[in-house]
Image (cartoon, rainbow, N blue to C red):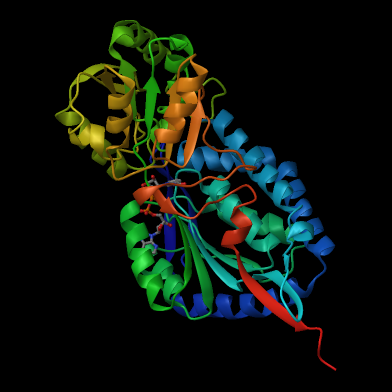
Length: 454
Ligand code: NAD
């Protein structure tokens, strides 16, 4: 048996050791999942709905211990981890309404009746990253099960603990055996095997754009269905008439939240030139007040980065970049990195162009709306974005012009379990959450019924 040591980023100590799945074990898991799926798909919609509600209740009943696990494994502040756990429960609750509402169409045709059904895909493979392990798993597991699939979930090797707990809670909630399976192991072996396995009908992946491309190429061989939630370099456009306090204060969560390890991080903030000086003054106060420290303390707003190697990567981006000001970090062990503001910086600087996935924001000045939109869109990514202005017409005009999938006006909120989420361009393919996610876990079947038959 090979084990993977799971490291706690705030202490650099081993938090747990988990068993790494072998490829023959994965084959067995998939074979059993395929059998369990047939029974699950034949269950009544009510029974599937009840099972999802029971999972939501189980998550809620164990919410504090799950939040502690997530906070310790990711280094996420406990208050954010509690929100993530509540979000995971809410996602299961939301999709518990889906089995009874998975409706098709009847379509007018000559000579009979035509109807469509939304059929489950079968066994779906889910591959998730380390930044919000439980929440992102829930976004995939809940709609996949609701639609009648079985799932095999491979969490990131760095953060498998909450996914393993979710599996345990799903079983305790009465979900049939072998329907929801967690396999731990590296992407290069376990992840790849999942993608290439003939009994896996679909891969839902969240992670880096680079790995997403590799998955899409490999999945193409079996014409596997794929949804991809990938990287971002999201922009906020702050116009001079905006509530500058709210736009600056909101960055505490929007780019420094989860230490910037957030695919929607607003890591490029374009500020109208006439508001630049007051905006930077406000942002400096915000950054100096961010409480960076022990993830388990209630007052902590930012924890460490997830690993030593990730901290080194983030550091390389900042080494030759113009740091205007930065916040503090605790001394001692832990993969700490201070909230950092870069300015003045060119749009072409790697730190202003590439996804850093750390607590680093580039502040860039603009002179007019058209220029701001052009520069915000000048990226391979298109995940999220914000528009800060009190001019309603402009806010909608700019929102329509920005090439991104999740936009917010006078807000940094990109994700709700009840609304679709996903990226334009190289930020992804397909949508998760909201009603749209069910389409990603079903196939449309068309049936023509000849009413002229005798
Ligand atoms: P990653 O791409 O390195 O890994 C993600 C998952 O893929 C892990 O489970 C990993 O083991 C697996 N994996 C790695 N190589 C693989 C391969 N060749 N075949 C199959 N699986 C493989 O990403 P990460 O470092 O865990 O997460 C950070 C990235 O995720 C960032 O780029 C971030 O933007 C992105 N992300 C996107 C969203 C979104 O919704 N768009 C959300 C969170 C994170």
